[in-house]
Image (cartoon, rainbow, N blue to C red; front, side):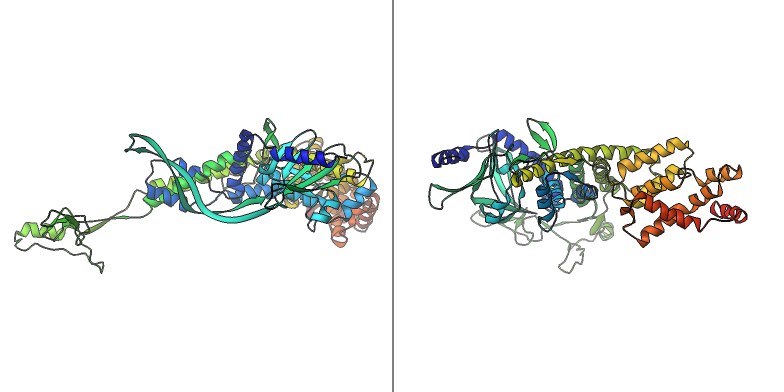
Length: 595
């Protein structure tokens, strides 16, 4: 147990801790690049990559900027959430820990749902270099908050062998402000110094952000023996602190960095990071489309100008007797008059004394105003080019694409795409299970003085397809001309990988394999067997009715699949026996079923 002097020394040491600046900058860039798409932050390249663009065009593009990729990346994130929400987590821990997990409420959710939601938001959608801290229940009863918390990388001060130090944003005093301005640096040639110079500009944008500023930080120091909480006393240089000792020393510090795709030097990137390059190109191309749209979507007007009719005006200026020049109020300094009246009437004036009929004829024949339609062909390119990049971004995170007529994705291509998605989801599953297991192991240590080794079974089947898609895929496999042993293996692989264990499809297939010996044969195959007297009446009748009876039983009792296999098989067999046809009607039944 540390003495008061040791704690004061630890506080002084902890305050001086900080992540190396290069590492903090690198993580911030990863975080910002991700949040451009997941949170809709302004993509600064839409401004900085076009230094020679006309200011009005650039301002138009920046002010009309919209985060068009946000919906797409959240399709992928929500799909990940859906897949793991339908996955089962089998935990082995002490009875006390299991009871604690089952009885505890985490934001009105169980531990698994809460952790899944928070982990995906942190590790995948917001900050793949965030920290996960697990607090003992006694601490949360005093200070509030959840036992499991995720913290941004910007608040991490030290991750060491003996301690983890960070600023608790939720417990610190802070201020929030909404900003709609952006600070940027502009380089220009300065005539005064005859050299390149730079200036800082603050410009207003329509892309608002909520900025959180910590005014008085609350530090947390996690060790294997205790949690130290301290903060500076107001109007003082001293710190106040509390120490929360664990019932017994832990084997590991109850705070760890979340698992994600490791780049190098313990720096992570998100599992949806493959979306970012194509998403960035989609934003840039859409920004270019806004500029092209501004230039080529609207007709241009030109009008004939006549010299200013103010006799004292010379090139838009009037010179008085003292030689002082002032702007002509008639032509506003342009030296020319518009032929447009305040009533939008275009006037043609013939100078006094102009009598040449040919000149008068040409003057009257000339349009005082004309409209010019820009070449719109470039619009057809620019309006669709950004969509191509967005589609590529969506495909990189396995979002299902709508197939156009004549460009239908082949069954083989779909299968390969699902195999790629399965590998991707499997990597996410490993990271999720690693972190979830650590959390449960820490809870086990909090609940028991001699903690047991926690085990967490990693899912191997994922709900990559809906039940309708699963039935369609299985129907395609069974209807194929492949040998029976190949089809049986294809069905097993498909269900094993792409359908959740808890899905009725899995349980129905298991029962049907026990009941129906002709399950993997198509109706065409079975008809051939019947014609050759290679199938019994009983087997044929079972093949006809087994699935429909099973679904009928399931509709009558949604808990059907909780019964043992023998009980379900007996129920199906009994129902089929009532439908066994005589030999003569069987021919008509076969004919009707295969029509």
